[in-house]
Length: 441
Ligand code: ATP
Ligand code: MG
Image 1 (cartoon, rainbow, N blue to C red):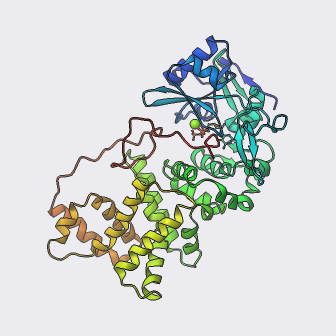
Image 2: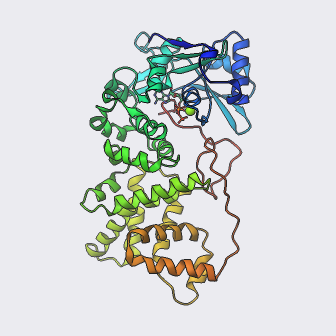
Image 3: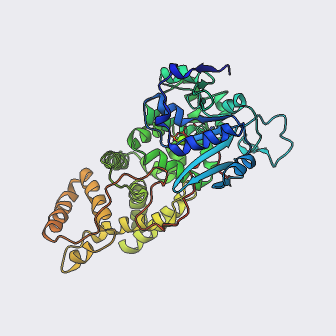
């Protein structure tokens, strides 16, 4: 873990690229006698010449010491205790250097591990060297020192970044067992940053992929948003499939795809390409649309089964299928209710969009989720020539009957606020932060 230090004139990071709030926190910690570094993705992305999504800080100060320094500080997390410094909607996350477990693991309040080797609690503090060893990938073990503006890289991280290599720190199998989410983080960083996963780091993934079933569904929901709704959804999806990581996240969808036809795989790819395109144009995306697409295969399949084997009519069969598919899915990856109601709307609109007689079409235009349902139909029509005429009919019908709609927001979603639906309750409190190993189990 010998560090490599780049002095301020040996790297391209300037303080102008770092958010004012992050700098404020760094300076205050430093002036109070603590070590303070920008760490992880913020440093990595700046070195790659990319705009970081957010800035995280690592320090020698304990969470309680951080709290004493900042009145706008809130301590969060049990599994991984952290300080959040709040500046309106902007939150700077401050983590105390993590230490090793073995010397102290008799105290379960500080450190705990499951029988599978999964870390249940991680609140042992240490030095920056130890902190670096506890991070996931070498390119994330990079620190920007506010004391002298140098960049400190551990574990060959600077060289790996240069070579565009993604390497897990330590023994890969042990590290994936500690936190299986690292497997999907590997895929995410590879797709997002164009890094190649090193052979040692990729080798255990397919075998260990089923460990994702032990991760709480709520944490996986947040991870899935970062995987599929961050602009590189299609590339990430293909990597997930390549490493058998898709099935533990979406078991029913994977099962339907395993039944021979490539139709639903193509449909998901189309939906993701569409989502990536919208994000690139700065348009709003909702997780509900993507979930509707991911689970469309299971819904159609189950509907058919309920009709042909259960003797139900289409209406009852499809309602039952919707409920069943959603309730099974949330055992792997959660779907908050504000999204699942929209997922249902999108599915149910698929049938209602086939009814073109009388006043029904005009009334349907007023449906709050009409647009999402229509977009979904357009997507289906791209794969299914039989639907082309219907999709075109609705396109023409809308043109002939313009509806006064709320102007659609054109801004890209704020990554820190995370993807939200229009009608999600907007609490004044900031939504819970990005999930990660630091989150409560
Ligand atoms: P981005 O914010 O662009 O998604 P990031 O690398 O900053 O990428 P975060 O989830 O913000 O990712 O985490 C910040 C840092 O915390 C990481 O760079 C890494 O050093 C560390 N980290 C996060 N999750 C884990 C984990 N599961 N195991 C080990 N270290 C982690
Ligand atoms: Mg980050």
